[in-house]
Length: 310
View (spheres, rainbow, N blue to C red):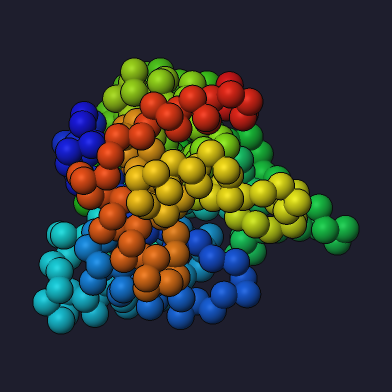
């Protein structure tokens, strides 16, 4: 598959995924309405790949934005590639289809284009996104039966509720559990993981390519700058001197170079922004064939001392 010269990649089940998508996760302090407006702006800019999840709690707003852009003639429904995800409180076979149907009701759409297992960890079922006990400890559920969950996802695909199925935040051993499942009907078309210049996931990328599984990068411009997740004293990737130097040399922004780097190594990229200017720049310039090849330089920069998937 050549992502350098195409705006779509062919998935293992025959469907096509645009190589540059809009990520819509936002911290709690951002109103759910920078998701609605951002989605409309992104579609106007040319984005056709919209990524969300039940856990993001914004699917009603995204569905409204998509339906409005269909209604005004900007796009047809079949032009949009929409991804949703099965949240960790629904990782029991009997909860899978109801969870997907709930997302479809919120979206007011007949199907999603891709439905992913959000993460390979199961939380206590219920309405709370992050169930906790009285002391604030997150409540885990029983061990996930990946193969049983996958069989239900295959049935959801056959029922037309989703066109493709995949996973998110899986390592290669967890992927192999599904790939080695007896009677496997559809293998995961993709694995969506955090991937950026400080975490290039080269080993996982190599594994996924060998199994015809597309790697999709979230946080492609660096991890969320939230104190509860990371040390915010560490400079973000976009302020790295090497990345800034490459951007200056080619007349691009550091964000555009970081996104283009992923595209050139065969990774589908989710770019998150709520700014009209940045949404436009990320799509129009990062996906432009006129941007010079710079992957070799960035590969050297990224593979020196940063962690990778094991």
